[in-house]
Length: 130
Image (cartoon, rainbow, N blue to C red):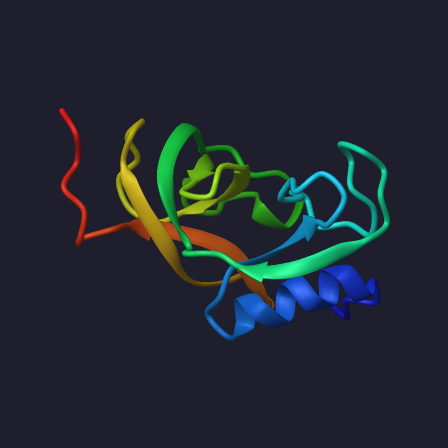
């Protein structure tokens, strides 16, 4: 799959390099998720890319056990809302056993066609809170 949108191309390029970069609005200061050319908070068109820590915690998750289309018959997989250390919540694939509050970090994730996708895994350097 070729990414033609320059904003998504920039996001995908960072993921391919092992980074999580998001645009920050220079008007209101908000980090913008899902990456786009305009700030959804104040509609400003002036955004600058910022490298994030790639860490966060699982806010919510679901286990997809019944794939549709090309995923029919696929192994179950976890989709999670991850609250990033910098604030925004992103929807991503989660590798490993899910739990709300689980500390996670960005990891390299590829889809069936070898394209990079936003994926997190448990962060072994952070103790889970009880």
